[in-house]
Length: 198
Image (cartoon, rainbow, N blue to C red; front, top):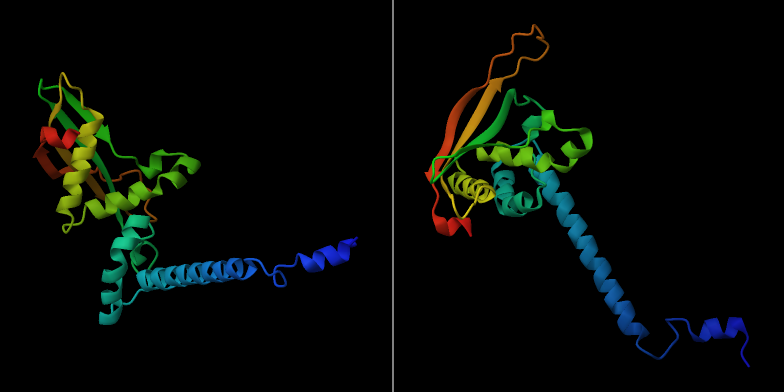
């Protein structure tokens, strides 16, 4: 009869003749994979956030851009410094149906949300910033189709969506109560293909 110490020694992973070596190899591979993943993230975030536009850095950003956007990790340096964005932007959409009903859809605005909800929906602000860039026309078409699906009634389907951008310049340290009123500007408008409502 074996005592407890002898049982522990015999069942130790390094001393058994079973598949302990295979488990150890898998564990080592997982550790290396996780370490590579963390290293990639550190490099990607540093490359994305560094405030220099050297050719090699710009080229690196272009390579990692799809991944950074897909994960929502992208961020602009100008949010913090040296010159923060001084534009207050928000989006609304006008949805017109085939029977000429009009619906107004408001994009989530961080200044109108509570702290917890703002934390969960921060990605919407990032998306809105990217929607207003000129190089994203395909993204605008997808967003317009997505908005149209909210109002997809088989008896009165959406026919046209107009995406409006409201923008005003912020004036830090000037709180005189005379904030300029944001003016709407048509960012995108298109008729909806019924196939896009599926």
